[in-house]
Picture 1 (tube, rainbow, N blue to C red):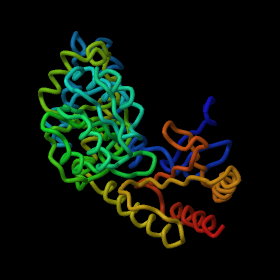
Picture 2: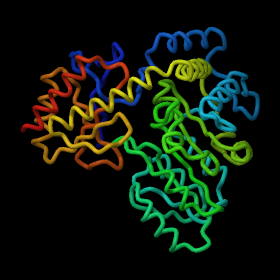
Picture 3: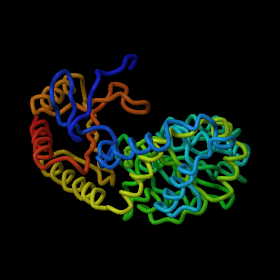
Picture 4: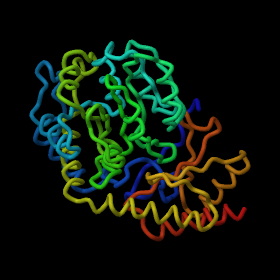
Length: 366
């Protein structure tokens, strides 16, 4: 897609203004609508009044504000990780890790549908890159057998944003050679999956050892920035070797204050996460009952891949007639012609959900 889509303005937490119309919004990845929560918005204003906008220096020179350490400690506590390292942009944690660990692995083995940030990060690892079939432990095992003596870094998303599926992390760990590690891009699962929202590791019930978990603060937490969760050796390597971290001005202080508030809020109040996961299960079951086939993926994401442009237009017309924004997207790694990606939120009303299910039922009947 060579042009930007039409502009949208999000309002009322689950609606948008688009072309002058107020439409239900089943898109984006602000799963709990933290970005518009009054406490989070208030935290931005408080942070600006108290701290100003920016430290205007890297953390390794004169920009290591105590708020950053407080945020890192809170994130590490939330995820029960040894350390958390703040990144100013959610796209960069994987690249920062790769710069820090360049030369440490003989090969990078990557899920073929990995996020673009993992693809970009692999270029910094200074080793050959081998792709394996999407969410396929048997194919990963075959690739590893062909690389005797391999010290690999396995690279994969935790929850894949195109359909809400989760990586088979336990199976990957069983295949991982003793000298290997996993770099897990958990942007979409962090704060969402697992009994406490700790992401794919908790969802799969696997230990943290030998896994580096990268997350974003702009999805479940609704703010901005990223984090790298790992052991103290990984953090030391980042501080010593990652040019992107060393030379970067960190997150604006009002956003750091908002992120801190959001992390603490989700830790103290699990109800939105519990509500969303229950809602996702209920909606998927209702869609199966009206004839729409859905796999049993954990995420609150429902993909619809049209068979033709005619079908695409039919879905768009039906959604607009029901006052729902058609969430039709073009995304790298997705279908070339685009597809619909519906994303549920903890804040959607029963009326909005009923309306969405009715559209699916009508389109399934043809």
